[in-house]
Length: 241
Image (cartoon, rainbow, N blue to C red; front, side, top):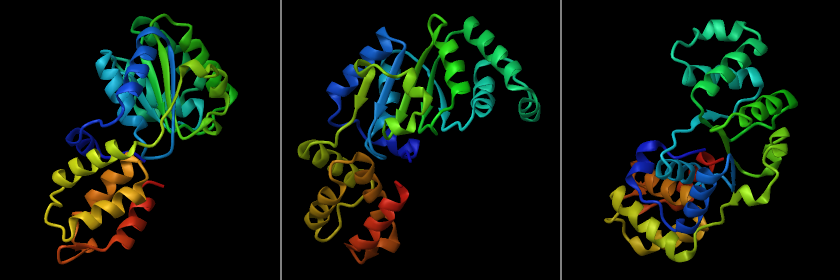
């Protein structure tokens, strides 16, 4: 699960300077990048920030289950005159592959697969052909390598992998303070108690910190100026599942 884009835009990227530099170097000098870590840890935001810094606009493909589904998602994004959705669904995958490869040869792009379903051999072979095209690349964001399936054959090199760890206590506290201001929680009473509970429960997970604060701004989690932390935390975990 990712944060809504407006929430991402409102809050700074905190505590990830080293990881951002490393990912920028992969996107600039290589053709593959794998970012792993638990849900909410900040994989999506990091890819977006690194791609923007490198002047890239990767084609984002969220969780395609099959090669045909990936091609249905991809073709409208890379062709000037895409087929209607019904036609894309009816055409054989072989025909769609040919169109996609032709478009990528004409205008190379990075593909970004977010939260993949374990890939099969047909999807792997297509992406292998994509990576043979000069200027094309592949970025994947996943919880762990078990999500990759056959994609692991393309993303085997540990030098092209970044595993995100939780934010340290200082960075987590800084992000929490930013989120408290963004969502107008300064009047919570006692605010320090909310901060303590939030930092402990979130355990350095940026998505948990932001989701906690966003939900805490809603009236159903409040009793006067006090936060009902138990239901707030349960719904936070549910959102990020």
